[in-house]
Structures are given as C-alpha cells and as structure tokens.
Length: 216
Image 1: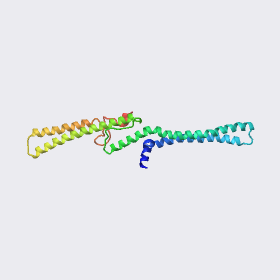
Image 2 (image 1 turned 180 degrees about the horizontal axis):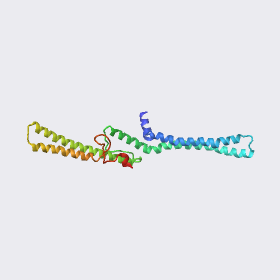
Image 3 (image 1 turned 120 degrees about the horizontal axis):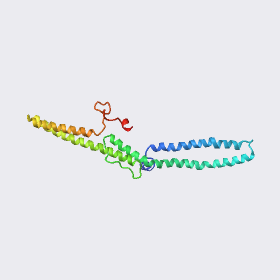
Image 4 (image 1 turned 180 degrees about the vertical axis):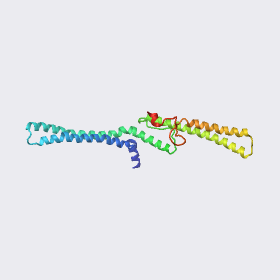
C-alpha cells in the first residue's frame, strides 16, 4: 500500500495545489451545467408539456428538447476529462513545487542544498535555477566568514599565548590585534553584499531600500 501511495504521488497527485486547480476546473463546468438546466432544459420541458401549445410548435420544441438531452452525456464526459486532465497538466509544476518546498524546508533547518534537482520535463526550471544561485551565494558567504573566523581564532590564540607568557613585545601584540581587525573588516565586507537589517533591529539601513521600495 505504501509503495502504491508513493507511485500515485509521483505519477498523479504530487502537491495539494493540484486539488485546488482540480476544483477550479470543475466549478465553472458545474455552474455551466446549472445554467443550461435553468435557461434551456427547464423552459423546453415546460413548453413541451404545456397542453395549450400549438402541435407544430410542440413537435419542434420536442425535437429541440431531445437534442438538448443528448448533449448531457458528452458534456458530463468532457467535465470528467477536464478534471482529470487538470491533474496531469498541473503535475508538471506541482512536482517541481513539491521538490522546491522540500529544499527550502531543509534550508530553513540549516541544511543548505548544493543543487536543486528537478525532472527534465518539469516546469519552474528557471525559478529553481535562481533559487539554487541564491543558495550558492549564501553558502559561499558563510564559508568565507567561517574561514575568517578560523583565522581570527588563530590570531586570538597567539595573542593569548603571548599575554600568558608575560611577553612585553608591544609590536607582536599589535600585529595580532591588527590581524584580528583585518579579519573583522573582511567579514563586514562579505556581509555588506547582503541587505541585512540594521544592528539596532529597526529595519534596513538608511542607505538601503526596503523590499517594497526595491521592487517598485
């Protein structure tokens, strides 16, 4: 049963958004069916059943009514076909959306992906590529910060060793302090490529536009 469920999800029903478009394709057809009943079938039926109607007119209306009745089977079949077809059409982007959601959920937990792999015929390929580039940028920045942190810790350990040994070499101490300051400046330069909130937590920096401003 579990294997069949996975096959069903992979081949037909991948993401809840498919259910939404299934009903979006079904509702207009149902409304159209009710309009046909109210506007065409009920008036024809009443006209055919009216004993005061002219016999020739009744015969013509009877033929129209019979023709209208024959419309129902293909209409119902087209309704079912449209609903089923919506599943297979949305499957091309629903599968991609499901995969992207998985990747983003893992990224939110700290597991940044190296690649976002979609099926060759899936939609949203361009969006997945942009998202992958964004993760690459973030990963590269974090790795660069990690490298600077390691160098900073090395300089700090050397500085602590000099202090503990009672060394009074001001030049050596100053060199280590300058090395730590250099690493700090490098980290700030890396972080400056991102539009981070200001340090006081009040929002973007004054010289950086907010998201809404940037998109106008």
